[in-house]
Image (tube, rainbow, N blue to C red; front, top):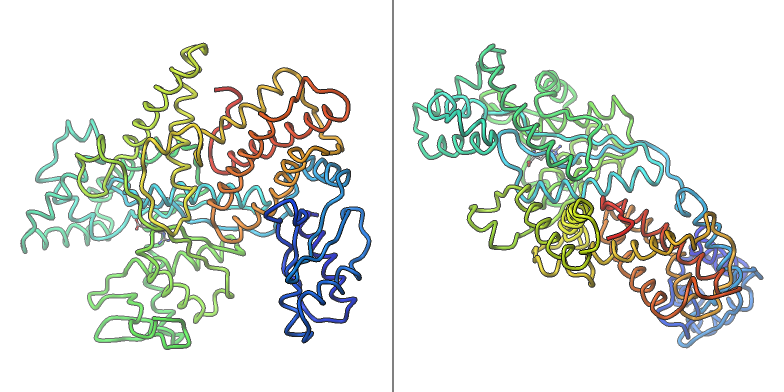
Length: 566
Ligand code: ARG
């Protein structure tokens, strides 16, 4: 059991013994050593129920707290905190136990989770929103698997709709075959933009015809569509390969096309959808959720065409039927919040899902640095360019700092570091805030960066390489305050992980790993490890091995390649 849970349970027992009714909130790690290792603030909550001063309540709790080998001292601090100090030997034994488990103390989760992420649109370059969805989604995916969930990663690509009729017209009029061979998606995007610039009534009509033909299965249009799709997937796959991402399924919007008409009919029959001026909508009222009553969800236009939301309804239905997930998580930028609120409310109305099954993880905007990218307009960028730029900057640093390593290894390190830097710059921020990429910051050797975490990990590996670390962790006694601090930090891994998982925020994990790395470096510069003896050596080698395991697992969860030396 994680330390927080053990301690919280003890406080709960004290509260129950005193006859008060309260579900005790989890104890918190103390901010400073003179407040013990953990603190409970439940006396403040109890003071209302018990009609007494928090200080008096805390004293009662301290007196009725059960004896436990974990706790060496209980103190009450004004105005009502309960401070718990942990027994040194227990700490070392608990950490060894926790980190000898394959999940490093994280409780095993059950159930299948579908994660819908990346989801770019065919024949268009991914925009930075897709980068964030890809990077955040991949981290959530790894976290869920690590916790024991079965995961279906589904790349819900935009591969259907009226843009294909336009593309087909544009293809016939303006395609430059050489440019298509060179950069297929770039060329498709160019002719698509040209279509929007040139479009007049006649062109629009032609495009509508081509879309209709495609939907009826016209062989030539189907073949062109397949070409657009293949070219786009090939381009995306390059990026996914580089980021170490794979999906269980890539069911694009087209996959659901045949399900839409019958679904709309079913929704009408069930009374959830209704006709409104020739179109079909799902109306909402106040009880369906905030801000939903004003606009109904449009699921079929007056001309019979289906919409993005119609496909999403069919997608939910299909996923529920096929995988019986306990959760479906969507990762997109903030602009789709309203869409998902409508979708989730509709699914609830239909009785398809219980509260909490559908989750939208939305994120803010990301701006890229100027220079290499500024010649491209808007936020349409080639992600490969961003990664290349980052890798080449990383290469310069690696060449300077690690000139003794062979050229090939330096190239591999630069690739790992450059890609990790981009990923981490994104992941380490609260997803919901806007992010600006700044190369100097992203690639800094210290600070909250991927490189700093990777260096810290490599430091532990270099001690391991000298044959100095235990294979299995053994109980140890962290007597020195710096050892104790590191032990405490390592014990908090499951707590940080649980919070990151529950809130869908990889940034919580980043923050934890950053703080752990700082604590470890402090330990490393302060104390001798391999040159120490007796209890010191046992404690320190175990602590380095423990740190190695947590950092290795932690960066892997974020999608960063763990390097043994750099
Ligand atoms: N293709 C969409 C876009 O680029 C994102 C799809 C998100 N997933 C979903 N099921 N709607 O905006």
